[in-house]
Length: 260
Ligand SMILES: N[C@@H](CCC(=O)N[C@@H](CS)C(=O)NCC(=O)O)C(=O)O
Image (cartoon, rainbow, N blue to C red; front, side, top):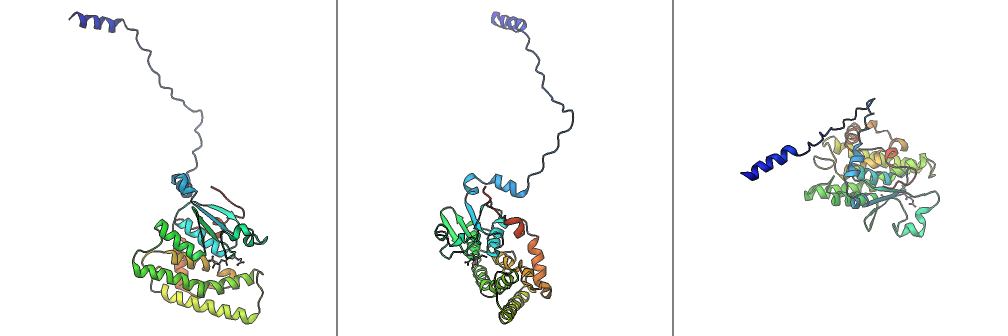
């Protein structure tokens, strides 16, 4: 009882605590709202440092195959560093580049310790390792590979040769020009037939087969090929360009290296 009385007295005599005033800073003017981070910036921030440094793409801004690889990374929403390789100065034929790509070409994609080359093989590697833009169904998986091989065999060569001629990078006469033109039209007719029946090249979703083919057809106008004759190809192209993460060559391929 005595203890309780003493405790009550102590409490009564204890100095009162100063009231805590919460400082509410009222800004004179409203601060400007921070710009919302872009989807790409959010992704880069979310990736662990190791993941952020995982990929480096070596390429050239005007190279279609470099665009294909960059487009794969963009659509799969993975950050990467970009190293510009100066083709005009022959940087792709120097020993330090040939150890990355024995064929002396861009693009090269470094994934950790591994160097991946050939844009179609790079796409397949990305699809497998990031588990995106591919099918796990065996028949569809095989179809994706077939289209990517076909695309280089029948579509990319005539389109890129005609583009190179139009850009003054290659010289050839009418005979070859007509041959490449005929080949490009034949390949586009195959695509038109397929895309008249299906939304995407393989299965019900876009795969790396779509990315590889888009990476070539993006340059059709520069090769003086009119896609207007292929309405299903045009609708597919439009659908493809609406995919999240889609970007043009100008948006993806800087003229200088860009490290993250
Ligand atoms: N099939 C290759 C083609 C790559 C290619 O032709 N790259 C060109 C630039 S667009 C190149 O490096 N050309 C230089 C050369 O072949 O010596 C791929 O898909 O990666």
